Length: 174
Figure 1: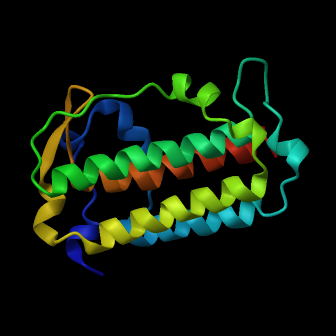
Figure 2: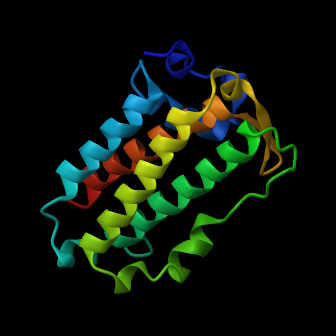
């Protein structure tokens, strides 16, 4: 296991908002955690019906389909940030509003199989990105949403974000 992939980011490497996501990731190789998260998602959601996918657990909450597409959207954004910063791009990147994305996503008009395929494809791309980064790229940082963050932190946040939502799905949707 490459040492740079098993070094948990220090809290100084990311905004406090992300601490819960980083904490979700087990110790060890974060790329293996990314792979493991995809396997957990596939096992948890492989038999979910369309009716379950269309259900929100409470009024005003997202449907399960919207949660899945949110996970894919967030992962794309985290990976984009990681790519830019890993390549030494010092351009400050804007934040994003996941609550504005959800109603615009069209998730509720899609079927569960398509959403799962998309989430798996996005995760595969994230794994490929993080596997291919040279060790020195992991400590590079940039500014996203007005806050400094390292590539290493983005890898751990990416892994932990999906794990967080899978816990919510298991507790409130299934």
